[in-house]
Image (tube, rainbow, N blue to C red; front, side, top):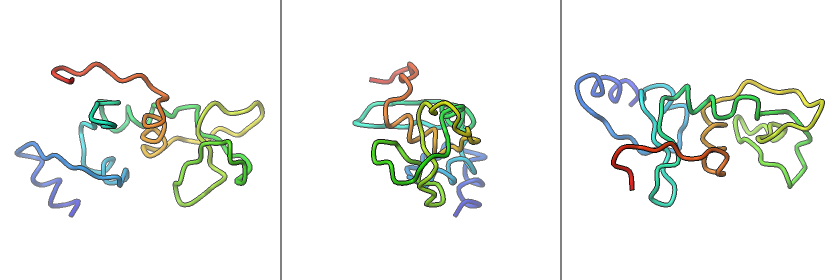
Length: 114
């Protein structure tokens, strides 16, 4: 499927709606994250990943007050401002996506967006 979408995208615009963030990173040049009918983010996959820079950290897996990334089902991977002394991890596109949906980034103005 990835190969087909990539091939089609070379000569035309292809709109993909997915929750599989690794697919987005693989074959998309531009990403728009929509929530409640509004664009919450518009940019490239690396820009979406950058939303989470310095905001992914390892902590106790059982703290219900923390926002957790579901990457690889690792419940010790948390999103948000890391407490002092916590190890900061390399962000993924999924981390950026989750933070955008949680309202951690103001939407970028997009031409023609309502």
